[in-house]
Length: 197
Image (tube, rainbow, N blue to C red; front, side, top):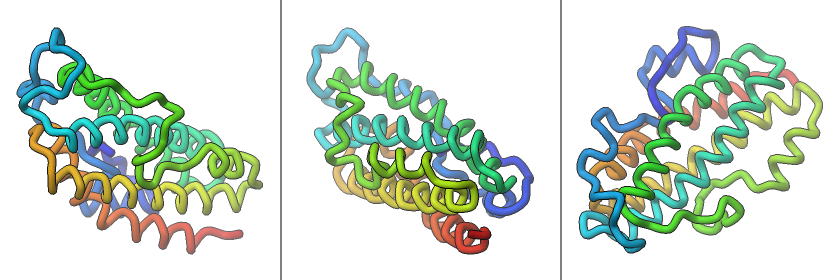
């Protein structure tokens, strides 16, 4: 979800050449328009309930995406899958940090990590466990397909944020996700179809 591209084969190279990262972090300081961290635990006036939902759900969504990225990096047998996993870790780790800062800045209560309702495209615990149990060729393919589904969910949540949210840093993140994902999702599916197994 941020834009660090490494010129590698497959999906990483395609995305690097087209400038399409998994998601893109806001370029400005994510808390520059936020309110003080001493705010009560209600949504700040500069944010709507849609902003709060987006931040909470994306925080949980990013947590699982990072687990999936680490698994792809560490267990992938195809170099393109490992490169994709590395890129997800590089990009989404700082994004998740921004989301955590926004929870504090906006004074919203974060969702428990075990609460996935509303996090569109969230890779469930069962699906993640099944992935980890798969043999190498199937693991590579399914890691990419689960990532594509997860990213489609991020696009859906981002579109909702853009329709109803007002918090500028969250809207900037949502805009970058929508713009980046429309190119990455089909590419992940094409790469998965090209893999053996």
